[in-house]
Length: 128
Image (cartoon, rainbow, N blue to C red; front, side, top):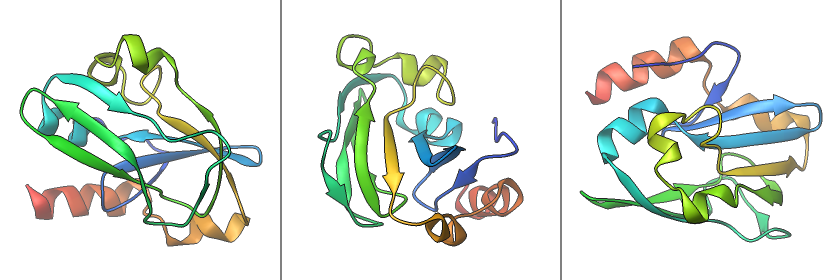
């Protein structure tokens, strides 16, 4: 299981990468492994204002449907439209081409409530 350094994580298995003033987000390698083959992604709407913990959309796999939850408070500024036609890219490259959305956080302090890679690794071991 891949847990890259330098990213932030949520207990709901979302990763967050700080890119200047934006936050690129997606589901973790652990989450995509648990889901199995991803067959559909319901993306959030660009321009949508979200609170931390708000439902952003869903990821559907051959096993189940899993809700996506906002890791930060802010505005959705971009979504990965490639997932409309090739949702399986989440299984192949969850931290790269499988990203889900870009959020403009309301404040930089929103990152404070997220886990670092060590804390997330402990969280995953507790769940496994």
